[in-house]
Image 1 (spheres, rainbow, N blue to C red):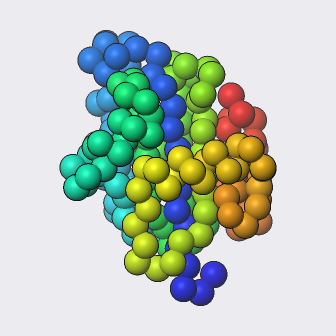
Image 2: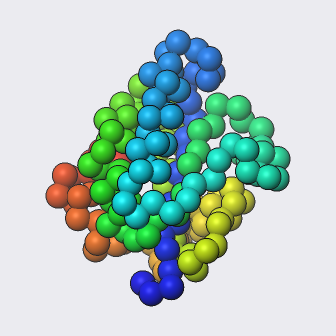
Length: 164
């Protein structure tokens, strides 16, 4: 889409506190996965913990739940995100999500188009996810199944993995 980039928001609740040894593999891998994203072709931006004003917004959006892990990023296009998610070290961590995340409220992902240069915040991400959760796929908010360009998602039968 000309003049547009793809925003991605996902979140889940960890089974244990961040300092618990049972989620150590996840916590220790965050820098590795984020660095892989930032080096990926098509990566534009991600919301970081030190973003001005977003710490308070994160707490509000997630009701102060300290076990929530979330990512909000912007990509050039669907293909770039598809490549990163399913064809880098990220996929290894994604495959282990059941070890680290509660089954309920796990796998919460939404995608939407943003104008080039727009940097969404946590509240915008949650609003898009709530819209998708209530209404399903639309041009306003959608999941992987809504985008024909997500070839790796389809080829690797990631529907089953994404639903776990």
